[in-house]
Image 1: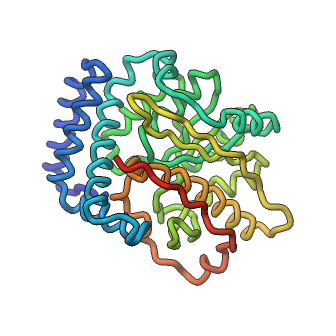
Image 2: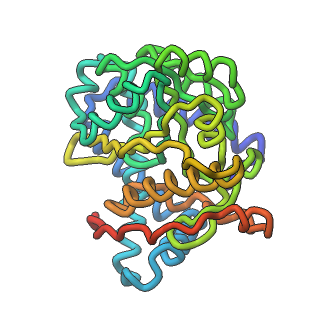
Length: 319
């Protein structure tokens, strides 16, 4: 999303955030969810630039699979989900880990257990789906230890809120590049979680296929797996009714017999494909206004892209 550079406008935005936080943090969970959906629906009509971006990206990803009316409804659902997510963040600090755990059902927990049984920790890769901040809190409620690896927010004035929200529940936030701390956690058989579904051209990456188009993708998780031997576990949180479902995929490991660049490329393509398959389950829960395909492909990065079988097509649930 575009950065608001005007200092006065940013100041008013932050004051609005503080006011909304003060009001919404006292609301019951269900009321906050309902209000968030209303605010998200209003944002759909007010933020025309972001609405057009989301529609354009849906067309790029799915072609003519959906009619214009279906795309419009889907993007409305995207905005409602984001509004609901934001209001939920304000209420989360009031909830106990037990209350958060009771909201979530889980598919594939045995995959995470199998990955940890290797004794080298696990690198969790996820996407901005559903309410992604539920993910580390839910795993904490199950007794898993670890940290979230995050880059600085575009708007640093909001960062203390996000870091404190996790820390209050016992989840540490590490800055990207904290290799010593990450290695220590993995050696202690803990979890390291990373959101990897955005085009971050400030970080080392390559182009891999995402929804049929080359997308610049960070290689940090794959390089870390190659360095430490820790498996990569793709997983996402999706909304389901009034609660959530955590979907965990089978762990991925470095492809044997490949050189380092090719191994990193192959592993990055694999976990990107796994996340894409989960986004296809319900596209309205992903952030389609993000410029996921903004960085042009270079000849060097294209030579690293491995040839893998086509991604499975999953019929999405239209909101």
